[in-house]
Length: 79
Image (cartoon, rainbow, N blue to C red; front, side):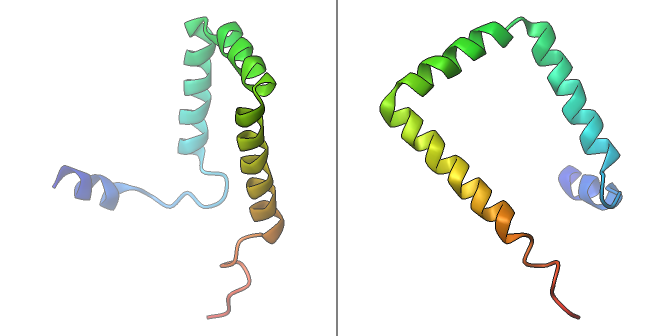
């Protein structure tokens, strides 16, 4: 029941959702303060050297780019 109340209380902030942007920025600040940035960068470098992981990452990137290039299918829908 609590989740239902939470959903009904959400406002549509339209494009440029300030609440989501604020939450994202706060999460980034917490991550930076955690001191894990250098460790995660080293892990990312290691993953790029591993052929199978690199291929998986490249495939995911290609899918993401393809979706971005296609655009939002709902944008051109007519009522």
